[in-house]
Length: 95
Image (tube, rainbow, N blue to C red; front, side, top):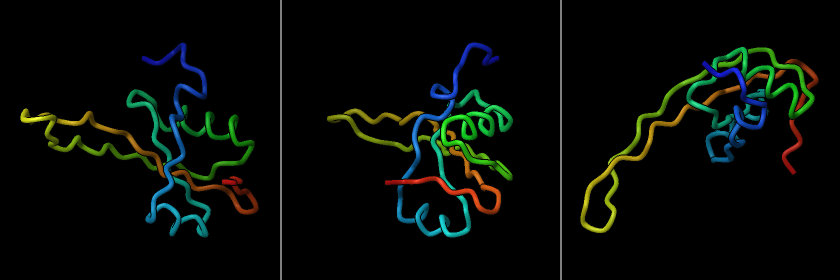
């Protein structure tokens, strides 16, 4: 249970990929979030950090990929991503 986490522990980073920039005109932003965080915590953290109103939050867990370190195979850790849709008139300033 995540009781002592602040907003900056929940929201790790705003992901800037080619795909995420294509959904920004629809007021959707992609965040890398803490694996333990739920949608309510993600919503309140985004509203607190970016001072915007959130309409909805969708989450997904991306499984870790097989990578090689020198000669040994290993796996990346699983990552939790959140697609946050903002209410009409809200926008996150990227610059």
